[in-house]
Amino acid sequence: MKHPEKELSKAIDDCSKVLICIKGSPDPDAIAAAFALKILCEKHGKRARMVATEQLSLHQNKLFVRRLFLPLEFADSFNKHLDWADSYAVVDHASAEVEGISDKLPCCVHIDHHAKTQATFPISMRWCNPHVGSASTLLSVLLARGYRDLGISSDEMTRMSTALLFGIQTDTDKYALATKDDYEAIEFLSQFASAAILRKLSGVPLGRRTAARLQTAERNKKIYRGWLITNVGFVPAKCRDDIAIIADFLLRREDVTMVVVFALIRNDRKKKLTLDASVRSKDRALKLTPLIRRVAADGGGRKSKGAYQVNLDYFFDFSDMAFLWEFVERATLEKLQRTRDFTYKVRLQSVLEDAKDAAMNVITGLKNSLPAELRGPLTAGLWSSLKKAKENATSSYRKKKT
Image (cartoon, rainbow, N blue to C red; front, side, top):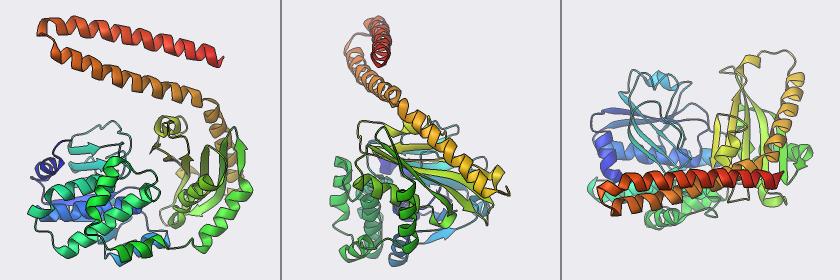
């Protein structure tokens, strides 16, 4: 997107009250991006609220919100704000669809860094860039291009920059996965961010409960063809983020290419039960989104991180939870092992998609440089050759695997 700052201004032009939805567990990247978007909306003369439906679980995230005085609101459901809002936005989530909201309010903004999903409704501004490490990076671009003209105070600039920098830090594994765009955002934000607050946030140790669940994951781990698959049993909704922390830890320590940590997340207040899994990979060439979606439709990833979720609300009141867990554990383990067996298909799909994109770029360049009367036949011929090459590559690869 060449001029995102202009697209944002245009997208919220007809809005007066924007509900910024943080879907799923609110992590620093989502919170920071929502906060920056809220400030930007307000500087354009709009009112905005940033709302999450899941509570903060990690000590680090609670400290993050508290130290920066971030105006994060919590609600059992986003539609509790329906009477207030006239539009909504989504940050740091692959889908802009929000239950109870999307069919009642227009979506003015969707900003994300995961693989783009198909939108089934109009979105005024949709900026999804999987080639950056965080949603905070994209909000940093918006901030950098407009902060001088928007009347942002020095206090607001410090809080926003610190929040966005911490969002980038956490989502890029302390910059290990940072891209060129991420580093450009870091360079810009570092001028205004509070180094003292960032040091305090980065030094928060593991909580006692997280450490205990890490021990459980150690006991339950199984190694299958270079994948470490483990679980931590039942986990209350407020501790959902422990799964991702444990997956990160095990990937750094174990000599494996992939780590999957799963658990049953129980929310007694909302009467919800879900199977949640965090996926971590050392294989940068393996695209996680198509791999994860072989396991579950409600999931995805970017670079070396991913997650998926399976709704099990139907079993919330089941009397024998030990039996339910035994069934879920066995089914999940078998499903993941079968997915590991077919990883080569995902690799082939990724290679073919990359080749297709490269070929289409060449075709487009050639097409634009030719007279109009030659463009149609050339494109048709090249496209036919590309399809034939894809079929030959697929057939050759399958024979090789056999």
